[in-house]
Structures are given as structure tokens and as C-alpha cells.
Amino acid sequence: MIIAIDFDGTIVEHRYPAIGKELPFALETIKALQKKQHQIILWTFRAGKTLDEAVEFCRKGGVEFYAVNKSYPEEKFDESVSRKIHADLFIDDRNIGGMLGWGEIYFKICPEESGEAKKKR
Image (cartoon, rainbow, N blue to C red; front, side, top):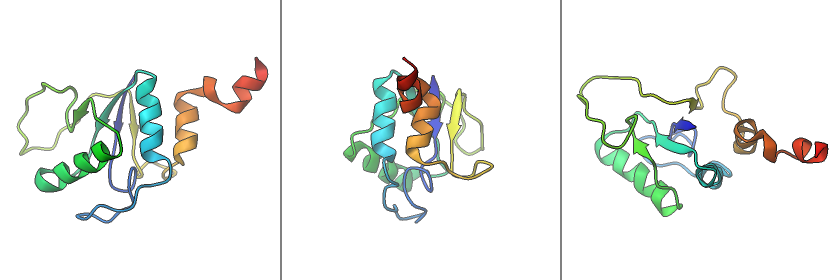
């Protein structure tokens, strides 16, 4: 599955243009999803220096993205216009209902890992 994840308010607390504190279990959950072969796209408003800082923050936390603000690594487009990217799932703090906790997000994507699923086996 291709999963696009926002940065500010989703991976870290909102402190734009600075980088806020990591939200609990954000990078840990992203790494766990990557281990399950999900392709993770960083999908953020950030550009230029602030984008580089966000990518480096995640890299230091052990997360390398499949793509950053594009659908696949080799994609070329006019960066002066807003556009959508292709993903199967988007994780963003601006969802209706707000941001779920990262544990809840993980178990929605990987329900077979939930305690309830394991009890049924």
C-alpha cells in the first residue's frame, strides 16, 4: 500500500517553520509500516530549506521515504503549482475527526496485529 503522511501536526507537533517535538510513536510506527512493505510518501506543505529539514529530521529518526511530495521518486512536475499525489491512504492531522494516535493508525492499517485479532486465533 502507498501511504502519504503529512509532517507538521502529524509526525511532529505544529511549530512551522521550526520543527516541533515528535508525536508519540510517529517514527516508530512509520518504520513498522515500512517493514510490512508499505511505501511511505512524505506529503507536506514544506518546500526548500524547511522541507530539507523535515526530511533530515525523519532520516535521523531512521525513516527514509519512498518519495517526498510526489507520487514516485522519479516523478517530474512543475513545483510552482499545487497538485495531488497518488496514494492509497493519507494520514494527516486535518482529517475529519482529527488525528488518531499512531497506535490506532497502525492497527487500522494492520488489523491482523491487533490484540483482538490475536485473541481470535
